[in-house]
Image 1 (cartoon, rainbow, N blue to C red):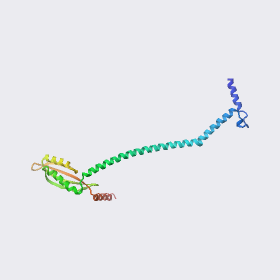
Image 2: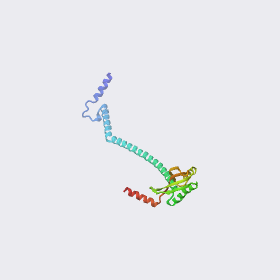
Image 3: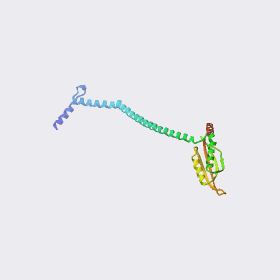
Amino acid sequence: MANLNELTDSINSQFRDLNGLHPGLWPLAPRLLAAFLLLGGLIILGWFAYWDSQLLELDTGQQEEQKLKDSYKQKMQQAISLDALKEQRKLVLQYVAAMEKQLPSKAEMDALLSDINQAATGRGLTFETFKPGQAVVKDYYAELPIDIRLAGSYHDMGEFVSDIAKLPRIVTLNNLAVSTSKEGGLILDVVAKTFRYLDPEEVSAQAALKKGTKK
């Protein structure tokens, strides 16, 4: 305890009568305290004058880096999605091209009507009605309905429907109705719909008509 008191008194005595003395002549304890205070002041001054801005700049750089990473991930996902969309578009175009091959042109419509006629007569059916209707023009194709009434046996009618489905061109049978004739035979009433793609002139006319309607 006495040694501690002596040490305390020794340190305190070093801080006495410092006024007017050059810091270099101060005893050890005051010089160490002054050095620590100076070091602390320099650290605080450096923090506000230099390190604070550096840390702020570092934080800003990290945020910008994260933004670039997020942007890169987003663009990579878009690129992957774009490749998938391109592949889907390619498949759709192939499908459309295949479907277009099943659509006759305007010049081939007579041959298609002849095929429908042959499908019926080839099965022994008798035409009572074969009446093409008014063509319904769409954006890129035209739909031609044909009112058909056939007389014959049930089996032959079934074979006729099967033969129509096997035609290389698209023909749909709609509103099928089977009834009995006065003679006791069977009558098939059906609306056959065929489709043809439009000529370039017809496509242009449709586009102009659609554009005029919007105005």
